Image (tube, helix red, strand yellow):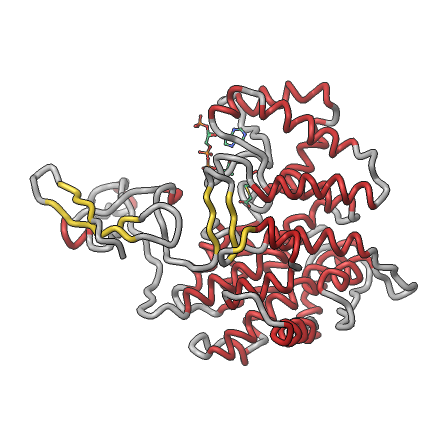
Length: 430
Ligand code: CMC
């Protein structure tokens, strides 16, 4: 709490004293919790443009400076020196692990990778062309019908098992969705492999022959997961918090987050970027598509551009762009027309008055799909990959919220603009 207060004066002269709160870094917030009691009014902020929905110690973003920190550590440092499983520990526990703590955590994540066989049978109920995000959200929601030993949200041990299960099993669930869509047998997880090598093996291995895991591909995936691991109160994380605020089953709250992530304004943008680049097809069409994006009468937007919080470069996009060069070179795919097109599109947009004036920069989704494509992951699976990385963020925020003393259900108010009171008319009189 800060010692500052803000005074809001109503047109009739009554006023409300609203205390300010200061975080570690970042702007103060005004606590409006008593506003309705004091003045009988609500605030109105569709899309939460100026609204902080909670207090959190997990992730900090400075959108003007292009800063992203997990538990105080700049994402650039984590991307360079850490690895995804260590970042998961950091996000969940607030501190970097000792060697022993990391060993124990890694072991637990490895040992929770298998799915109950009955869950695997669910996939047969999906048509082969079901979108993988539909399958993944359905199967994760169904986990609430299986793992009853981890749903007492007041028990810290249950919460820990739940967290580890989500992080460990999501790759298995994702790989099963992919295998179902291409009609191949499911590949079971291998606990002797590291997190990302196991994913590649489950995606691309087949029972008929051994599969050679490419360490460069595993490293690229690991980096993408670090960059996707958390992003404070984004749409899917807020959805998880909101759904779980009623003390709902935690697996179903994560399924709600997966559904929110799927939208093209959020995690679905990585799939939409690739589709857009393929539609643009050639550099000669870039101007036409940039003009379409600027045309208010055209619903087309430059996918992978713009962000609610970043009004400067998204630091994740900068790292991923660099990584594209490295991954394509290491995989021997230096001649990537899609990457060339993306680089050129970025340059054209960054010089365009419309994008400059509105502070529209490439976001995390602009380049990530190019790497997924280079690794052989199909476009329809891109948002699923995002979900695997973001799962730890959802779980960390869920745990933070559930552990909060005096936690209350999330229940926003509204500005009602429907009909005033009217009397029911019998059908013959309408
Ligand atoms: N192309 C063209 N114009 C855009 C774009 C874009 N990609 N993004 C925003 N604008 C314009 C928008 O039309 C509006 O113009 P005006 O002020 O004249 O009405 C202005 O910029 C502000 O946009 P907004 O929609 O009010 O901003 P927002 O904060 O509500 O939305 C956004 C943020 C990310 C949904 C939006 O920028 C967008 O739709 N981008 C494309 C989709 C995308 O890449 N999403 C991934 C986001 S990052 C990863 C994640 O969240 O998962």
